Image 1: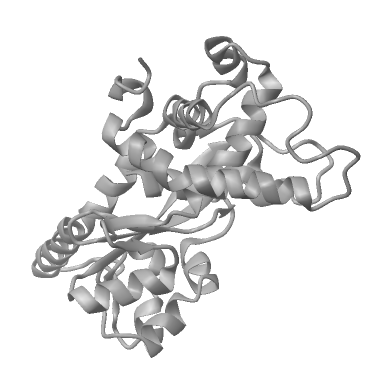
Image 2 (image 1 turned 30 degrees about the horizontal axis):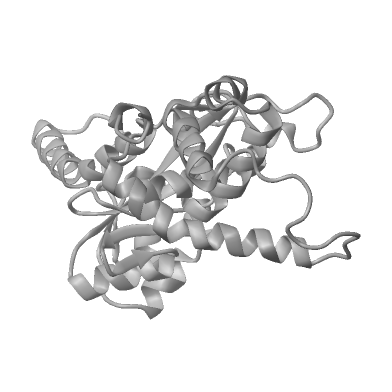
Length: 289
């Protein structure tokens, strides 16, 4: 019944069947590799069998990502122990994250470099923007506790950089960084400047948080115009400035739509789990859209 209800998993039954056919063999291979990687006192395959088959493990992970359902509730729904659900989600989520963003049946983008190359090959304009995901405050006494405080919204968060095309289709979502990391710093750490300097001629639209990348990339990163008059600007300048700013904003609004589709999955609206798993969660959901 869960498979047939798109409101529960966020995916159609056909897409879930494709995921089972694609990820199922990878999951079995990793399980076998884990079993033979250490010395054993009994043969591989002996002992207790899995209480949760792979299809149920995938469904539990999808429900967890879509609705942010806690593991205790999922354990009751599937008739297993909470630890079984925790282990299942921990095994399936990285496999979903490794799939990358699907652009077409034969094209998947798994890195920022592949996204830039795809934009260059198709001749489309790329759009980048950072998005924050609220998290629980780190425990008192941690040395890096303050690094998760967002300078913009003043709450504890992690941030990820999303890349979409001009149609709003997600091409790449980066691993997360602490909320204090500025958008432009995150882009530089991902190597965007070098990719645009050495790669194809691609135009990237960005907001004011990325001002400065245009000069470093030969104008390939386009940001809103700088304000020439700080005070007592003439009326004619205000009119031109507002027109230019709105024109740029209307071009890059598609990335906001793409991020909104990501945030429809409750696991990205607010995260209450371990921060170490957040990167896999972001990239897994981006690959499922």
